[in-house]
Image (cartoon, rainbow, N blue to C red):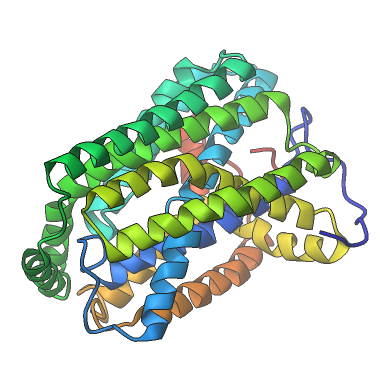
Length: 408
């Protein structure tokens, strides 16, 4: 990464000003999350072990591979890391204001859980907010953990989860290898598609039917990895590593080299197993490999954004991402709402009718619109709409609506 170093404002610190790099990273993570989530909203086949046979062109296959290898299981880790990092900023803010942080944070988690439950039932079953709310209790209990101990615990969580999948793959291989029942998967996907194209009640019924499978995925795949990322964010926040990331170029460069080699290799294996051999012992082993390597690729992405932010031209790009990150919760829920209006019976009912490349194009267009809307909104308001409500619940007081800068 080269370029003229931009003149940058002093990073946020104890005075409570925002760290723009965190907002930019959060905005970037939102794009990656949308690229993954839209694949599940656009097709009831995705995630069943059988991709929609109606979309079988080379462009369809390439798009699926790119999204699976580069995006799936990577960007929620970055978002989770930032959740843990922001936790330390919130704790500092509460201490600075003389408030009881535990009580405030518990109110915040309760509000996130309520929003997530509504989101999962009405808009998108693959909600992450409820998981964050529950894991946040562990984060609160671990808030005094030393950074080194937090990092060790995170590595252990990744290692144990990855090993678990490798052992499951080995056991399944010994038992015969497994695989996906294509006929059953096709029938299930067709039934779900018809339900999602139906009335609002039918859509909600389809979401409720999917929730047990989603809960299983969250419990055994996303939750351990998200908690590990929380702990890494906690450690990084305690060390204030993002307060002036431009000074950490050697570390960022090493993260890029490692992430784009080891991390991307793991992503390619995971994509091949997921798309070509779903449900097999190879797929389970690839899941384990991805648990171990996805954090490296997520770290490489973050390092790239941070290094871009240290250059004049790159700073302009990250400045476009920052408003989306400041309104991350609003944008996350708005993405699901707009996708539900496009793909389910709430609106156009396009589920199963949009190819993977078209779905990716819709995601990019939607995110671009959110960048523009976010800048417009924050020129006039201090917080995003849902952030304002979350802050009100957290502090048990109505925040000011007027435009201004704020630490958290």
